[in-house]
Image (cartoon, rainbow, N blue to C red; front, side, top):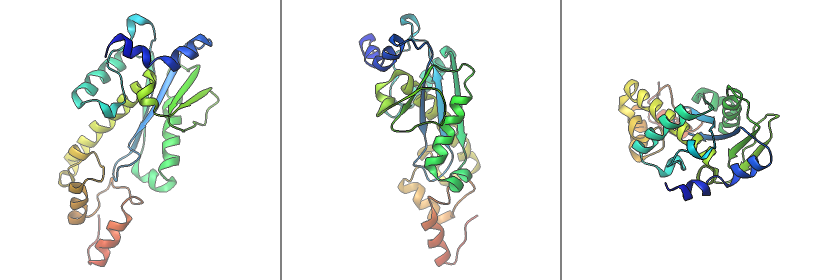
Length: 217
């Protein structure tokens, strides 16, 4: 990413800096859609001086895995503060994915060791906090701070799902990270649900297996 590209992703940050803010936190989530595993959120405050800017930050979905891993290390090393939080699949089933995501976002903001002057969130999410916040649609692609948060959350969750793959190798979590790919759906039909599947997301598969006289774990 060229310096010009970094500048394009700092428009919202510079507006807040000009308004008097010093510490700006970007917040994003990963894992709203998968059939298994937690939803993960990250909040990060990065230094915004020219000499400390990190080249390459973007929407995590646009980056290759190796680049995300590289940036994860740089972001976590250079951050003024960052926090990653997760809400389990069981709690998602209890309170629904929207409420779980809001809870997760609030947890990572409250977990920051430095209180931000303003919080940028991706999309239309509002966090239950007294800290001023700004919602930015497609913020992970438009905001440097939110893009950094999306990378932290994505890498953390991907690593977690690779660990889950070791516990439940028949489902292929290391490849699809819990999303509803054909391979994942075929595995559910063959083996049923495991402990980390979201029951509210996979109800029809349980019903199918019950009709066929089979049960899930």
